[in-house]
Length: 114
Image (tube, rainbow, N blue to C red; front, side, top):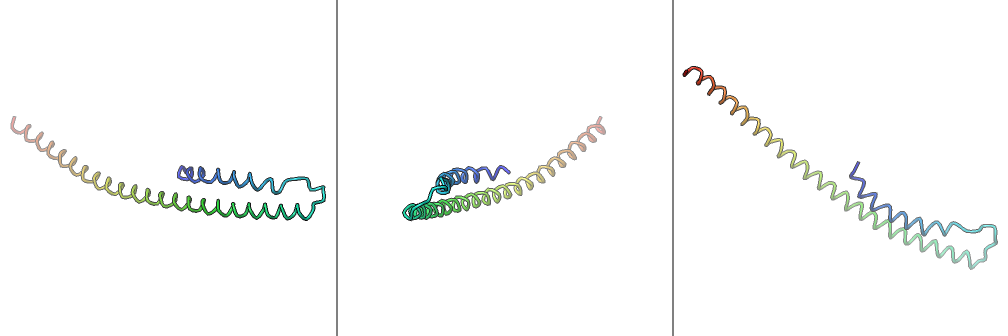
């Protein structure tokens, strides 16, 4: 779950910027008749917002791709480390069993030599 925190941190500022630019384009007093120039200006403003949204979306997609690559690499590294630690654990168990067996043999010999 915590792997999505960097993604959220990357997305939220962009979404706030997009919303800040898009909301004024749709708000306003609709009761008044608008002139052709006002509509043309709104269309130009919306086209600009769409262009900015596309650029922001492209940036966001690149950041998401980078994040996913980093997560994949981290997962691969963690998996390799886990495999290495498991093999070390098996070796340590063998050494512990050998040491225990040697200690038991030493105790038995010490009892017989008394």
